[in-house]
Structures are given as C-alpha cells and as structure tokens.
Image (cartoon, rainbow, N blue to C red; front, top):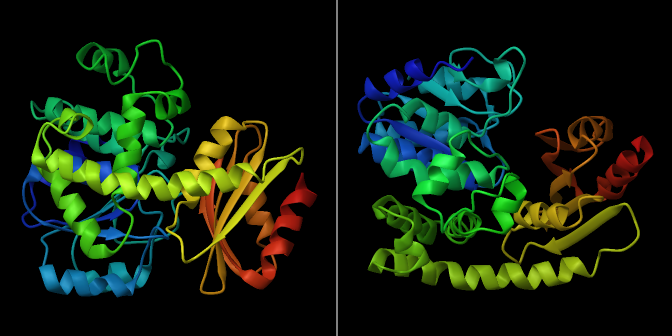
Length: 344
C-alpha cells in the first residue's frame, strides 16, 4: 500500500524542491497541491510524451534542488536518475518500468495493483493536514479528470453542491456533466499553446484560492484564466465537429488531424469514448513524420492490444488498460491499425 505518511515526510523534509509534472489535468493538479502546500521550489511541465530523459538535467543544474519530485510521469530514463545526483521522489500510477535509484509511490506496486490518479495520491498524503481543505476542490478536479471518484465525494458535494451533484456516481458523467468537469477542461486547456503563455497560466492558477474565481470571474486572476480558456476551447469545438463526421457503423472511430492545429488528442478521444462507449477510439495528430495517438475503449482492454500491435512497428506506446498513448511512424500507421483490428 502507498505509504502516504512517508510521501508527506519527503515533502516536509526538503528545501527548494524541483517538480516535474505531466501536462494533463492529473499532473497539473498533483503539482498545484504540492506547490501550494510547500510554497517554495521550481517546476517544469513535461509536454507531450510523459517521459524524463537527460534533456531535463539542465533544469536540475539551473535550480540546484534539494529533491526532485516527478508527478504523473510514466517513464524516467536511468541516465537521468544517475546524473541528477539528487533524491528523486516518483509519484505515479502508470505501469512501473524497471529502474533504480528512485523512491516510488505507485499503487501499481500494491498487491493487488491499483489504479489511483496521481492527484489523489498527492491529496491522500496531505489529507490529515489542516491545509487539505484549501486544496480539496483541486484534488476533485484532477481525480475526476482521470476518470475516478474519490471516497470523500459526499463530503465534497455537501461543501460544493453546485460543483458536483451527489447523485453523480460515475466519473465520466462528472467529467462531462458537472462544473467540476468544466474546471477540469479549463485546467487542461490553459496548458496548451506557447510555453511563455503556459507558464503565465500556471502561475495564475497558483494564485487561485477557490473555484469561483474562475467559474464566476470574481477576481482578475480568475477572469484572466477564463479569457485564456475561451479561444482554446473554440479550437477544440471545431475539431470535435470534424471528429463527429468520422463516426459510422465501424467498430473504430479513427480521426487524424495535422500539426498546424493545437494538440487535443487525449481530450478528443476521451469525449468520443464517453459519447460512443461501444466503439474503440483512435485520435491522432500528425507531427514530424509521426502519428501521435490517444486510444480509448470502454469494453476492451486496449493496453495489451497496443503492445502486440507495436511488434515490428516503428513506434512506442503505453498507459492504462482502457486509455493509452502511442507514437507511430507515419508510414507504419496503417499497419498499426490493421494489427489492432486483427487482434479483435
């Protein structure tokens, strides 16, 4: 079982931490909770593939952290671990790869293995602290965004009945039919775009004290985030309309778009499977000769299919049982799809 007391102790006992976190809502909310609690340190958002390699060592040299916290990142290369020469605290819920020299807090290592979003792992570490009430809404946003409902949902609903109806018990319904879900989309979309804008958006989120600052624009910071969200959401809605044209009688929904548009592969795939649970969804953005994909399923475990479909293919992939990411060379993409179909 994940040792939440030990995880909090790692956070309490460090000076000048450096946080690496994935650029999805789960990773972002994990970071927001820890940084708001610690009130010090530096951070780097890991865009696109959740992977830490030697390229990130320059951040370690620049910030000279006491410890490194890696949040919601599926892979860390051994060379990075060896050369960082700092304690690395890895909080994650993906299938754990082999590596040495890190302290892992991963429910996949439990017996039996569990899938608990990183946001909830971070909140559980802080839950017994009086500070936890201040970040509970952030914990709910990140947890729901990763298709999970925490055990304390009823307490949250009493406190924020307008954000989440207590009758909602399924995370996918909460994500698409509640104000918590709207916040999850705002959090996700303000990590899109040029890095200078993303940094400003995350700095603004760190100043937010309650969800209504954003939803009702009760402060200038909340209004700023709302303004940043609107044009990005418009881009998403345009792509969503295009995707809907690809839905037919086929078991698969396959939608591709070009790199000159903002990346929404994970978000599009997630909404598509929610609205079409009988399908298998493959959404891909073509970039630099590679098809960068998000795959979703409700009834068929997609992770083992991907692993087998990648045999003999130029590409990589991984994730969760029903939600995965993959990168496939453009010339091998059709073969990859055929390999998945043949397994079905």
